[in-house]
Length: 304
Image (cartoon, rainbow, N blue to C red):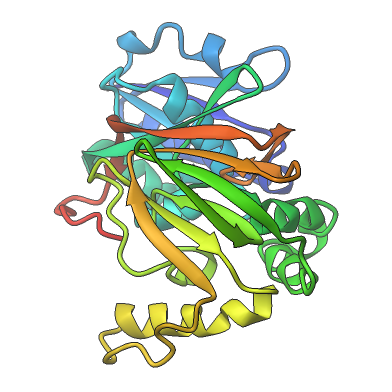
């Protein structure tokens, strides 16, 4: 097997084990080509010869993994999401282990499932995401977490969320599959996968292979008011009975294939943990079955 390994040396404090994984694959008889992503080698250039490989390993945080996946959309080459960043939510949703030997085994023996990707268009630019994009409160949270990640790791996102006690509100003007809507809130999230940090559900069961996003409008006055929805989502995931906070009005959810978002004032935008230099307005659309992600043998249900 010929395997291309792409890694971001800045992800996860530079402590990735992907080079150990590459050596294990070479020992197993694979031809392994390792490329370091960075200003001298952007993703698009790094994958120009991808047709000559049977596997691609994308090592880094969610931003690295999704940028590789987007660059390889509809190329039909399976991608292994190697967890080497801070949160690694894509790898979490795909059930990836965290040991180089286990990940090398998956690269050899795992099978690939087709997963949707998202495509963002804003300010004349286009980029892709695999996990989650959003404008407003979640982008503010990611911005606040940047200085904390080196010290606290994934807890940085929790601490920065707790700082959003009085986030800005606005009126979001949405176009949902061609139908206009206007909703007041603190943020709009577009989810393709369903598990957040520590495996907490974002909102019920989300299927990343159904050709639709789950759109979540955060209507609460602050982040703490969203806790009842988190509790109900956990209860649903664990089959603990009916929701106990249903109808509290802190969130509104619906599905969409294409969504345009504008706000009464510019709101920051993030995609898979990366802050976009542009702000609202933007358009997000589903790219159905655009990428093949490696998963564990026997895994068929990707409802997250």
